[in-house]
Amino acid sequence: MRITVVSNNCTRRRGFVAEHGLSLLVNWRGKRVLFDVGQGLALPTNLAQLKRSLKEIDAIALSHGHYDHGGALEWMATEDDSRLPSLYAHPDAFYPRFRREDGALKRISIPNAAAGSEAPWPKRVSSKEPQQLLPELWLSGEIQPRHPEEKDAAEFLIDRGQGPQPDPFLDDQALFAETRSGVVILTGCAHSGLIATVERVLALSSRRKVQALIGGFHLESATQKRMDWTLNELRRWKIPLIAPMHCTGFEATRQLKNAFPEAVRTLGAGERIDIDDRR
Image (cartoon, rainbow, N blue to C red; front, top):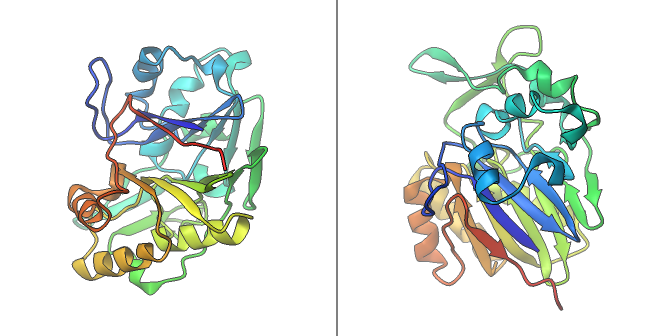
């Protein structure tokens, strides 16, 4: 299994573009799946740098409906329809979304959302339930927040046609692969909670071991109390590979590295992880 970072907040490779966003290209059983597509600034350039094109992508899976994870759908919608892969997303992913900052609402939804939710996509799968994209490769579907310790202090809102309301992040979902060595979990932002996400995936998977935890952990504004709780919870799974990205934040990444020095890897756009799928 190979996971290539197409978009992330940083890069260490010449010729690649960094942005506040996330996109991961998953090579699995001879197929390619894009998990999130970033803002849209990095994807065209970085795919070209990787010598990949849209016609080589078999499916796109969205973790949730924020601009930094689905923005490149707008660019993709300008491409030839025949080149567009299947698009998997929760029904809530294309509603207007906001974040309250300094008393004002900042729009953070996917730009031109109608282009992603309707035409020109030849195939769009909209579901709240777990979805099997490929053999042993799944989208988790809705993840219910379980732990008050993971409640975010930031105020996020969604407008389903009745004005902005508190966002329950029903569309927040993870991608996971059931490898022979354990389950590999990819998170977009883990708005439902990082620990709640791992617990949900393990409840869905036939694997009991977490082999890797990769993606955005949304810990950039976490209090020290929340960080201590999160680190303690993560210890129970003894995860061999942890790759924090995007919204995890520098301080949270530092603490993860200190807590799990042998497990944590930091990756920028253009870098990749190969995971052994042998027993």
